[in-house]
Structure formats: C-alpha cells, structure tokens
Length: 144
Image (cartoon, rainbow, N blue to C red; front, side, top):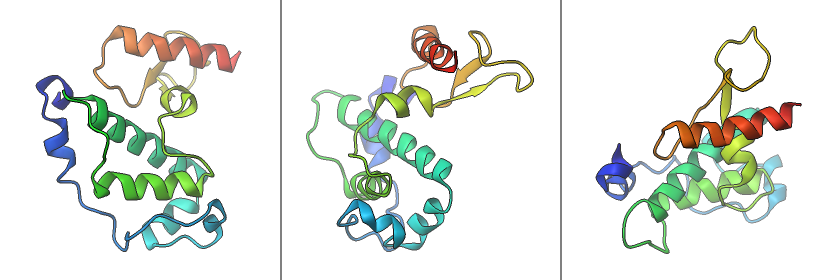
C-alpha cells in the first residue's frame, strides 16, 4: 500500500482538482446553490455526499499522518473538495466517527442481518483484522 511504502503524499499531490473548484462554499447554506457541477451532482443524493466526505476524509488524514514528518497543510486538490463537501453537509473537514465507522461499511451477504461477521469496511488505512473488527463492533452495536 502507499501508506506502508511511505509514498502516499507523492501520489495524492497528483490528484486533479475537480472542475471549477476555486474556493470552498462560504457557508453551509450553500447546499441550495452548490458552487460547481461536481458538487451539484453530489448534492442530489446525500449518500453520495457522505461517501465523498468519507473518501476525502480518509485521503486527507492519510496525507497528514501517513508519513514522517506529519504535515500541517493539505494540497488544494484535497483541501478544496473536502471543504466544499463538508460545508454541503454542514460539517467541518475532519475524519469523524460517522465517516470512519457508520458510513464506511457494507454487508457481506445482503440477505443476512447486520451482525459481526457479516460486515466489512469500505475504506481502511492499513487493513488487517484489528482495523476491520474495530469498525465491525461499532456497526453491530449501532444496528442493535
């Protein structure tokens, strides 16, 4: 993985900036008039906004914490879309409990209930059973 190889920042810096992203929305009320076509498309479905927020949160935190030394600034290709999506959801750009756990899983077998052993994460930092089970326990508790 890029994190394990210490190459995540180099790769993330090359991500393209979404079209017409010059600055983040000025207020959370901007959801009614998103600043660009990509955000307008995301805003049509809150699940898409949540997914974008989760993905951008993981990417941004991987950029900050994934290599030594830790950095205090994000490239605009991460900061601008993350800030715009966060504002559309009336949140701050940070990896939240909801993004890390509650909006970051799927059922392995859709016909079975939400329970330990039938969920898996959509995004991981390093992978492995520890990271997988940390989330699975929380998802199962929230589903109960």
